[in-house]
Length: 316
Image (cartoon, rainbow, N blue to C red):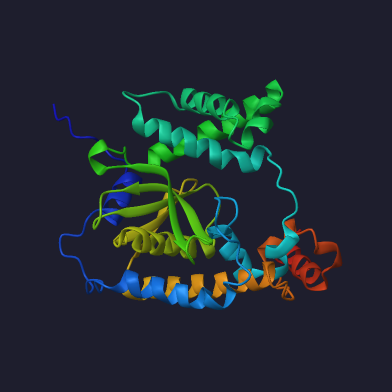
């Protein structure tokens, strides 16, 4: 009897999509690309050195994350102060719990029932004082907790059915941080990769999604590839979003063009973020998907018009 694993068609699609191409296409990246792109970012920040934090401590820096970068490129008013206070709930906690369960599933020996993995993940997150989700999880009543366990177990099972079992030989990295410091440590650009497989130059970065396809997902992955290039001098060869619900994988090859595009997006977004936050520039309002959560919605005519049209389009 063969010991080779038996894959579902969905798992085979993932392997075919992100597996190493025996005959890779495209020109190799210029050896000085990382230095060139980082120098361009540094030059763009020079005019702001007089307003940037001094960077003498971790907290005293100007931070920008992938989400903040997306926000500043969408609605500037939402980026500045439209988010309001974040609150955990059953819906937005699912992704964090499932990601934790996937992390545990990769590094455990043998096979563990998905529900047991979810239960253990919830317990660990609830007991981690450094996690903001902890306070939410410890206050759940028995019914809400059972509902959350059920939803997360279904998602985890779906992931295990659609994504191939991850081997240690693939050098898996889960929830790994990517960081680039600029302006002598006064500016910090950061992200966190859901899953990375392989080692440079064959590395693949994968975002695990529990919702629908969204255009910004590709931009997020390109940013990850850029941060990898700027920090270690080597970008991943490919990035991909894996949508757990539909077991679909959306890949993109990383080329010089995609990295240059990501660098321009980071540069323009970072400059505008500093202007808005530190120079107190007037924020432009641009209606979009963030309107439904924005604290300015009641006073934003553009946002109200957008939401009305969206409700009509969706048949509400």
